[in-house]
Length: 255
Image (cartoon, rainbow, N blue to C red; front, side):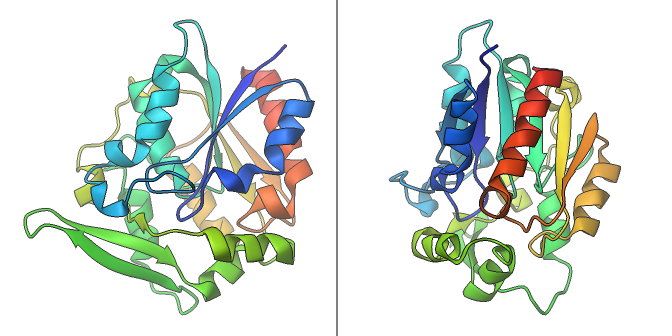
C-alpha cells in the first residue's frame, strides 16, 4: 500500500540532503515530500525573520495542514529537525501515523522543546566547532547556529567525500534552539505525546554521540529503537540503503 513520507532535514541543511533516500522510497512505490524549513535549503527567508519555533517550522506545518482529513504521514526527522517535527506533531497529532527520529534531538513532554538541544550544546567538548551568533532584541535575544568545517567533517566521517563537498557549499546559518525561540512550555502529552515514535540510532555518530542518543530515548521512551551500524551523523549519505530499509519496515509496521 502506498504510504506518504515527510522528510525533515537537520540544522544548517535543507531538503537537498534527502536526494539519495527520496528516490529509493519512491522506487518502492511511496509518496515522499521533502521540506525546507524556514531560511534553510532554497527557502528564501532570512534567519532574522525567525522569532519563534513556529516561524522556523512553518513550511512543515503548512504541509501537514494541507493534508486531507483522513490522510496520515510518516514524519521522519534528522538531527535538529526533531525539534520542529515534535512541534508539528504536537499541533497535528492525528495527521501522523508514526514519527521517526533519525539520530535526532527528541524533546519530551516535561521540559521545554529546547531542553535536549541546550543540554548537549552546554556540555564541554573540544571537538565542537559550532559557531553561535546573536540576533533578536534586548527583550527577546535569540541565537544563530552555524556548523564550522571541523564539526561538519565529524558529522560526515563515513560519508562519501562528494556529499561532504556538497554540504560545505550548501549549509546555511539557522536559529539555535534556545528556550527564547521555542518558549518555555513543554509540548503536550495529548498532542506530541500521543504520537507513536521510533528512534533510529546511528552507531558511529560523532555529531550526536550514541550515548546522547540513548539518553534521549531513556528520557522519553519510544515504541521501538532501531540501529544502523557503521552510520555516521548523516546516514542518508553514509548508509542510504540501510536507512531506506528501516523506513520501509517502520511503514509496514506502524503506518
